[in-house]
Image (cartoon, rainbow, N blue to C red; front, side, top):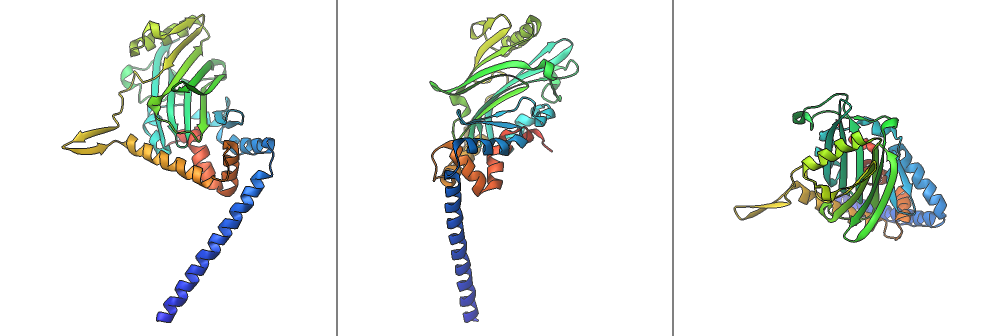
Length: 309
């Protein structure tokens, strides 16, 4: 019986050793494969890999953005999406601004924070087909606006005095995600400008901002464009990271989500350690561990995350 146990242990150790050797040589092969590619080939590979997720890769800025006419954006919006964001390792500040215009309730919302291994920011515009009471704003389902109702969004995402990236486009939901960067939502600022089709819509939006607690001195209005800075939400209560109860420190969900994101970031950096450039890291991860690449790079920041059960 003892000999059988020794034989089984020997076979197990041999199997582990063989697996380690295969992993080592496969890793070396992937490193060689990535190193042989030109920057243009890497850019094309990444662009093709994220296109089904409605994303666009910008190699110069090292960011992903959402495509203007992505079919995944047709899911619309409801407050449930913000409540369930933690499922995708997303921790953000959000500011929903609802206003009435042309007999309908419109919603323009801003987001900034940490999306897994990405620091990101977003602006989206949605509309209900009727006027909605303020009591039901968090429950109502808002539709995506038509292409003719898309707005000109521009924003600059800053952390301290550093500009992480800036975007400007006609869009339903303009999003940008800086890969391999870790930050807390309260350390980020969004300098936002929105261009409206007419003064009626702009005035309705500005009035809602003032109701939320923004001051006229916080806004810069020029013709049909409203500009302001989003630092901390005025429309939703701030989550407290921790509390003290009977001398015991009880951490909130956001605390553990921050820890999880840090672990994801360390794992990402460790797995892609042969490379320093973000584009090289992503291509290497795509070759080496495709399922992991899709999960941590694509799913959490694409429109597919809004298809909740």
